Structure formats: structure tokens, C-alpha cells
Length: 94
Image (cartoon, rainbow, N blue to C red; front, side, top):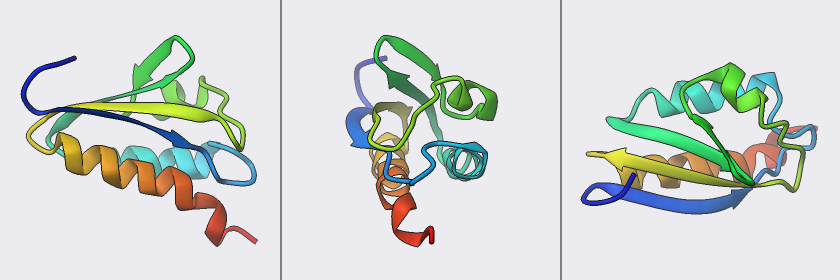
């Protein structure tokens, strides 16, 4: 995925319990709002950012670095919003 309308960045999972079902569901819901193909990577494994099961398969615990890559009209906005979600998730959990 490269070329016009492509964006990629790394973010740290901040939720205390990692990227479990609830934050993964929030991620998928947010990703679905953008007109862009969204992929998420942990290590060498890339998965579909609009698939909750794929995201859960990454087993991303708190502190895990994930790479988000998007291509499309809303690529930069998608990467920024999804990154904010990953990095702010731990701030709202008690």
C-alpha cells in the first residue's frame, strides 16, 4: 500500500487490558467511518483494520507497538484518529 492517499504511523496500545474485545470493537467502528483501506501490523503480521477477529489475533497487550497503515481519501485522518484511540484508551479505564 503506497502512493497518493497513503499514510502510516506507529502507536502504543495504552489500554490496561490491551486491545481486547471492547477497544477492538471501538477501533473497527471508527475505522469503518473512513473512506480508506486500513491495515494494522504487529511485528510482521498485517491484518484488516475493519475485522475485530483479525485485530484480536494480534494479541496486543498494553505497551504493544502497532503500525496503522491506510490508503484512500481519508487515509491521514483515519491513521490519526485510530492512533488517538489506541493511545488514549487507558486514560478512560478505571
